[in-house]
Length: 170
Ligand SMILES: CC(C)(COP(=O)(O)OP(=O)(O)OC[C@H]1O[C@@H](n2cnc3c(N)ncnc32)[C@H](O)[C@@H]1OP(=O)(O)O)[C@@H](O)C(=O)NCCC(=O)NCCS
Image 1 (cartoon, rainbow, N blue to C red):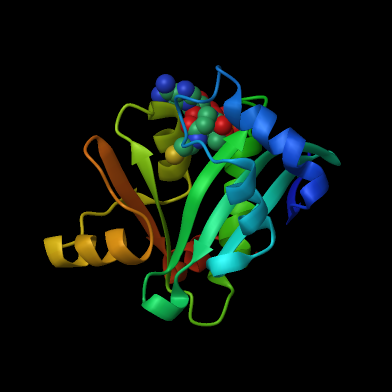
Image 2 (cartoon, rainbow, N blue to C red):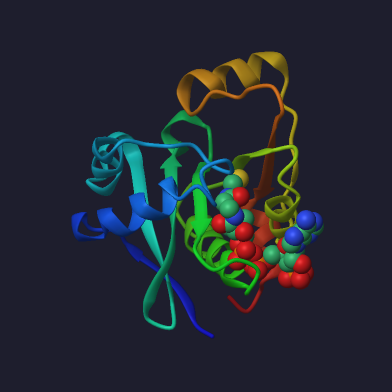
């Protein structure tokens, strides 16, 4: 099984939105308009959009925000795969962590996850991410500059140094 990331293009929009809006998926993740996806695909506002490919075929997508210029690390906004529990999500996030942690000045990668989403949390913990509770001031800054937190959602993060140390061959 080979899993990799490639930049999403406008031609992938139908795949992405069908997956996101599928009733089997939409309770796990936020919902964006076509325009919001296209803005991220275009790389506006330091957003990035990646297609997850498994064995050469689209298998999911990942959206990230680059907050290095705001001392806010690199934020995984959304991660979704079509066929679950076959190792694709973990492999895709590992590939993203490899690339993100190698960027100059990237000191951590973080995300937010529903407290009830045990499957996603299992993937994040397996990759070394841990719950992260910033001070109220720091949380307010992250809410303002990156993405708002909310009740029932936890932040998780991994330091780039920790990711590199656990995967020295990468
Ligand atoms: C979360 C998601 C991206 C993970 O990708 P995936 O390909 O399904 O995950 P993987 O197969 O790589 O790994 C799943 C792991 O979770 C474990 N798992 C599954 N259900 C679980 C549960 N209820 N509790 C704990 N662990 C669970 C599996 O055993 C597996 O661990 P293992 O590899 O040690 O056996 C995918 O399931 C998905 O798209 N879910 C819907 C959207 C979503 O929740 N996105 C994340 C929002 S923060």
